[in-house]
Length: 135
Image 1: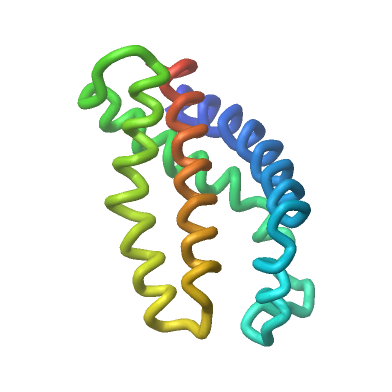
Image 2: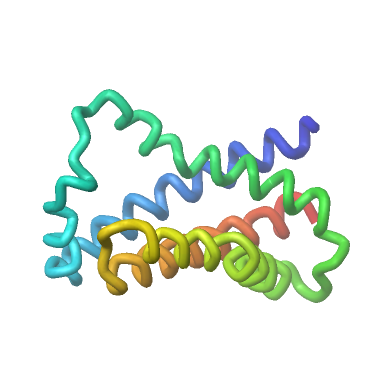
């Protein structure tokens, strides 16, 4: 359990930095996409902002547990293991969530595809980090 918590925390710190760097770059290079967030669906009174900022850690602890449980199924160098892990997670968990989000919420396909790409990149980065620090 200690190994899962430590690797989850390290992965969370790395994802936190990568996520906010990626968000900055995405807003800078794809500003039209982010104007779509001027939608009542995304307005918040600020009471839950901390939950949004902690998402990298929640995600990392979940993936650290998943990695520890199934790492023996991934073969090859750590980079390949991490990429495969991210792809598996994305197909098994992220794709169905994006499907239901698009079908149930008033969001555009561009938004959902950007969320999928963001989640995929997070999962691959987490997979690479986890494969390196918890082989």
